[in-house]
Length: 107
Image 1: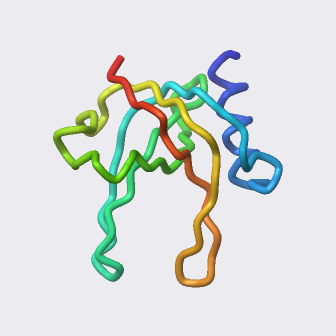
Image 2 (image 1 turned 120 degrees about the vertical axis):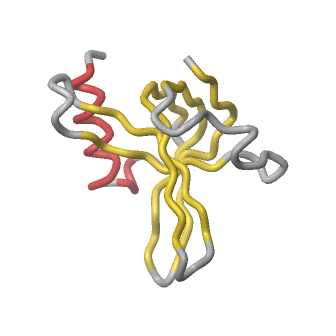
Image 3 (image 1 turned 120 degrees about the horizontal axis):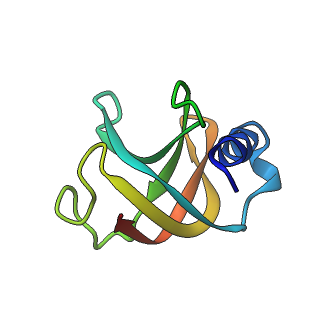
């Protein structure tokens, strides 16, 4: 798929996550992370820009619990490829889509 199509599919995943649970995906993008002070939780994302690079969509991912940040993760803004299965978790009464990652590679 071209970058506009990938961006569109990721947007649809975020709007209609129930249609994607259990599906395997491979996504190229760049790495970003955010720390939530209130919950004391770090989140990890693969970020995918559209064709013009004016807009981005991010998909959260989780690596296995034995992986540590930052040593087992790409650097912020580093290009990456991720493979995994789409799943969801609940936090503060909301459900969130994420990639249960099989692997993350720097590219």
